[in-house]
Length: 146
Image 1 (tube, one colour):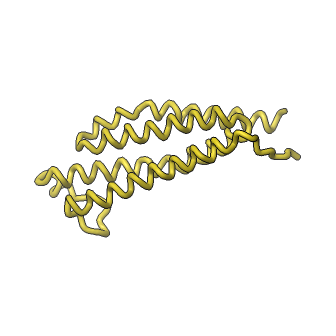
Image 2 (cartoon, rainbow, N blue to C red):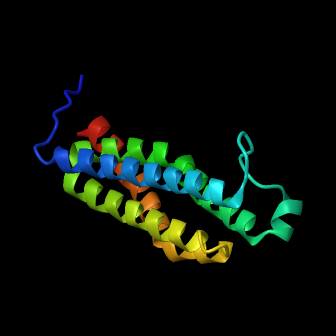
Image 3 (tube, rainbow, N blue to C red):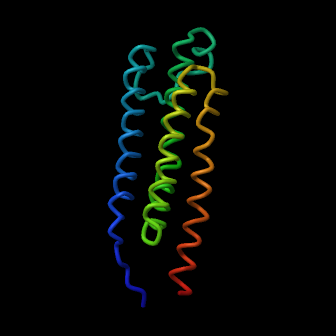
């Protein structure tokens, strides 16, 4: 049986996770504010294509919404990998997690221009995501075989 010990530096991991929650919350608030400006009523998640073609604000709203949704689609995996990697490598996990968070900010700010191709500004966040996948696997092996 393996005993889990929380390293002293694990607080950095927790702080990084909390920061990711703050960023996705802020992105959600931005969606709400821009929803009102673009006049996209609830419960519609996005403006329809026919509306977007006539109204640039609706296109920009869709970009705000998509940037937020994309972040929410990957955040659970990132938080899991951050927590697991942090058990063995807390400073590394926190650093890589912070790169992912900053990548989300750049991704969203690029997307929110209304030009979806600008989301690539945060592409470096994918490096952090895949690094966390690898480090989670390394952590699993270190638990299983050491």
